[in-house]
Amino acid sequence: MNESLQINREGRLMHIALNRPDRRNALNVDLCRALAAAFDEAEKDPGVGAILLTGNGKSFCAGMDLSEALVHDAGSLTDVQERIFTAGANMTKPIVAAVHGAALAGGMGLVANCHIVLADEGASFGLTEIRIGLWPFVIFRSVAAAIGERRAIELALTGQFLGPNEAREYGLVHYIVEPGTVLDRAREIAVPLSQASPTAIQSGLTFVRKARGKSWTEAGELAREMREDVFRSADFQEGVRAFQEKRAPRWPSLGEVTEPRP
Image (cartoon, rainbow, N blue to C red; front, side):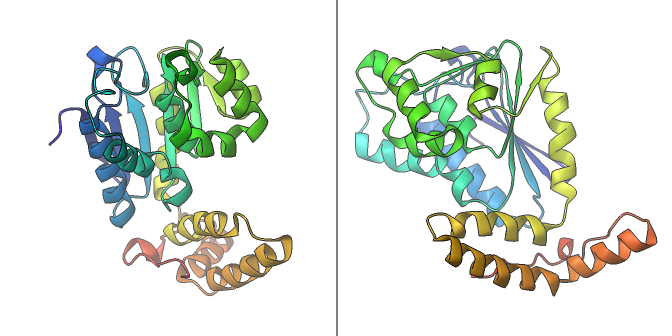
């Protein structure tokens, strides 16, 4: 196993921790490849219902490892980073982030890819690439999708830092929690997500991806088709019965995961 990444399974939850604490979890090539492989594994494994993404040490992720920036082929580095910085747009498993300390540059890009983000009161965020003569090319789309293009441009141009309250105001962070509690609070959200209906979550996230860029009418037609598919699913039938019988649902798709409509 790549030591730059720690992966633990907690039931249907995959806990992924960036593990380069001495480098503030800076994204070197090995860590990027390991993270891309972990996302791929989680997406393909029907036993994984959700992902919890954290960082070991004092920071979530300080961005690109500059010690490698001038010695690696830019094209190959961009290829693997493209995979990790578009995960949120392409995966059908929800990603919950527990952020403490710095989430800068590529670290902020990882945060923008997560579907739900919790940050402690000491967290900081920023697109700091401009400070070293770079533009956040690969992460820009995900950041813009999370906070809007004009605000993403502002942060990319100025390289300014955001505290957790500003990050929540911008739409990057959903919850702010007390220091030392962010992992436990994130797990409280991620575990129920991992146990929710795979059919509903996979179909829902697939709809979000496919509806992107479509006209209002086209997205509405897609919604109608996919809703009808879920209506016919065993999970929905079980969900209705469980609600009527006032009991916890036992999702049939946990035995055989229903694939989203192509």
